[in-house]
Image 1 (cartoon, helix red, strand yellow):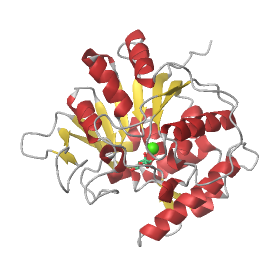
Image 2 (cartoon, protein in one colour):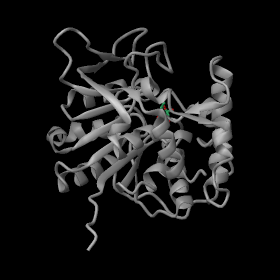
Image 3 (cartoon, helix red, strand yellow):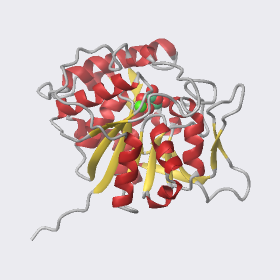
Image 4 (cartoon, helix red, strand yellow):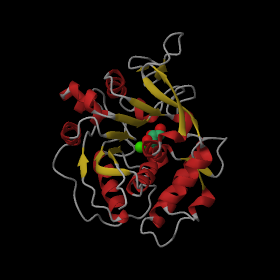
Length: 315
Ligand code: BDR
Ligand code: CA
């Protein structure tokens, strides 16, 4: 009799978003992950749009995974607004989207996270690929929750590389620094999948033609990704013909942690700085290494790309 494999139960927190859309495809097709639910937050677009896009992608994937809406703004600040330059006016590169077949559940994302984590204590991996507002809210309501979460795999931060919103800050941290700081201080085990590695995970224009055209999501993702690639090309003189796969890489690391090499450091988030707001401060002082967050610093690029292609349906 074949032994059944234990799946890793995950909740995916998104602000869909073009790279979030790829992350949803990756997660839905992973044979190692059990996707319990998807929670949504403001970020690349407003909450209504990120939720609609999430439902739309799940429809195209034929997945009935429940979706829970969360925060529509940062914990303490005004929202800086959507990011149409990178994600288009509709959050998916202005690709034509089919109408969605269902609505989000009525329960709030933070409440869903709390209930699931409590009911499966020590088992759940939270994969966050957006502002950390939903998780911070759950932890604020119930600080003991941190001890019940198996791990947070977070796309966010820039440890030893440049930021992408400011010189030092990455978008998911910069977009709600107080929330990110709460998460880093909570004691929850964290794998930080930041720009140090996500800028090495590259989707090339020619890869888009390798996507099986029969897949219901192929056209939306091809059009959206072309938009994303153009935005990166226009803004970054060093980028030609590719865009980073930030969010799918975090899902990939939850799926297979051996894809990245990590080092462990205390990490704090700057919330007061005039020029450094949202910076992830990684404490490399003598004696600090070994406690804190596991920070991804190296990536097995070829292995990641080969699994990515298989999961999303590229030949
Ligand atoms: C992160 O910011 C968002 O715009 C992307 O979806 C990704 O999660 C990259 O910095
Ligand atoms: Ca995102």
